[in-house]
Image (cartoon, rainbow, N blue to C red; front, side, top):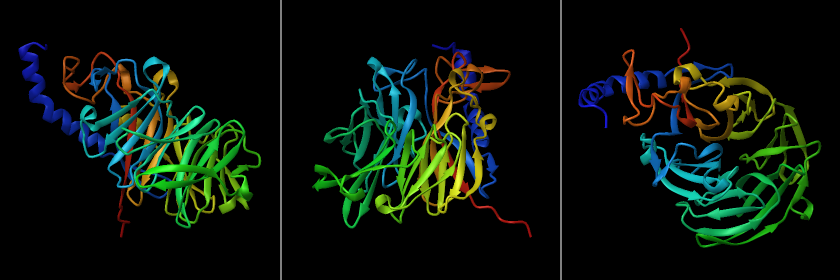
Length: 365
């Protein structure tokens, strides 16, 4: 335990530390995309704490997959490094500020690089050669869909049918399954569309990753190595693209399209006609995060939007700055240094999920 005097000192400075953290979190960053956002750390792996009895000192790591529940109350975070050389998925309650209590469910043993939800809250998880479908609480597997190296998935309603799209990073294809619902579960997944095969080869694609479907039924998919963002008209009859360096994932907010740029650690904003309208950059210093991440492997990967309000983005392999952390709970790893409260003075915290909330700005008179 901390010595009594230090414990009292830390307790007396909690409010001050929280106030400083809150002020930093409300840093408003203007973007060339014409918007302003306040950035916060929604969630991270606090390495001095445990979640469901598992110490987080060395795992989980590499949060790439990110999805959001249809009611916008929960995030699903997929980590492809965890115990026993496998991954895990966490269900995270958005309105709970405490990182440990915010984790309300954990699904171990699944390599979750891509995640999606449907309008009934079911969760779709890419894991090696299959897509696993779970209930919203991650308690029961409802269905398994055999697939290739599917890196990302997206759901849509088309003519009353529930449809699942998947991007294959190895062969540059997009697959389309028509799903048969059985109450809260699924009973069948049949390849269909794209001329009958249910599989469409994207011309010139080499390394397809994030995929989403817009309100018009257009399929948007990014090519990491090819540095392209593709837009496929329904049925794949018309394919257009734009160059974006190192795209990893994509999210759609009305007529705005947000593209994470992997280890360039930035977000490109497009309109729905594939025109680049600006870029967004994370305020690393204000958030007291390392801009380069763990072993300089930090990246911006999974991204999801809350329509008209902002977005969440995974800072894969990210970490707090200077091998310390101002986040998390006060515990035996906490101390004051030069009058500043650090929640972890011995080691950094990892895998931040960032929240960018859109700010309405009033133009000058």
